[in-house]
Length: 206
Length: 203
Image (cartoon, rainbow over all chains, first blue to last red):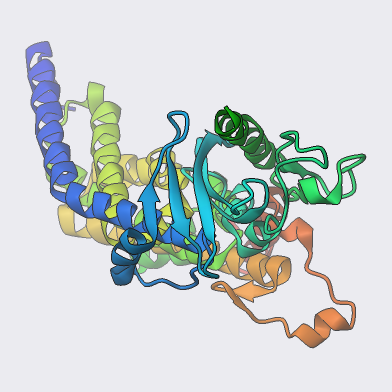
């Protein structure tokens, strides 16, 4: 086996790392505009979907979003006033939290009464495919429609994500079924809604 | 030629060498991520083999694992970025598992066992074949898991609604990781019980 001097080894690894650094930087910078454009379009599509606009194409999404939504932050949280697909006004609230492996986030569209959920979308960075990533599935998302984040007396209770059959005293209106096989991601969604929708409604009242 | 076909059959990285099992369990709940994962691993394995083979005579043996890791992780990061830029939806489905290709033992295994000792072209072919051998297992496992676990294939429903009406239920166990282990185990059993492909006496 050939032998190499220590100096060669140090030089070799230094040069290699530098070459790699330049290469990766170039790739990252080169693809950055495409990545960011993808993310922007995806965000517009997600919000539009939550507001009831079905199947908005990639090309149309940004234009459509600008025509129906106006940014209107509440208490420092990203919010939008939006005209929903059914013609009513809604409030889009950005929520973010922790899933099992990484961040999860979503947009909750509340109706004019600021209590009834008109629609939601969720997204995630790195939840398990086939398990946790089903928080983005149509079934899970649909189960939120019509739920209320306030109880009968008008106090904030959020929409709880509870395993099927363990809802207990929580009224049907204030809970949805968790995803089987994705307990921790479901808990993440539950905590995200409880913590962050509260901020919005409290600030709203003041 | 024969040696290059080994990974598809008698030397399948997953079924015979039991390498890369972790990701084979993780991304096979549905067909689509499994296929993209197979393609990504094949690309990384082939190009990493090629690069390491090209510089094999300059690599100091004492730091060869570090050099291999650097090359593999560079390629994986590039694959991840390219997926995010050009097939954004699919990259979201694969999420963490693209990054975990770095730790896939098949790739390091081929670099150590083949690319360090062979010329660039054979190394490249060897990488492709091992990626394909890995991918075949993923696709077979994902096919059964998605079909029996979700009643869909490539996201499209294939189990007729009338079956559900008649009392058919999707097997929830199929989409959980343990079932992937059982399926891979079953495949290993089938492959190793065929005449002439038993590896045990040799090992």
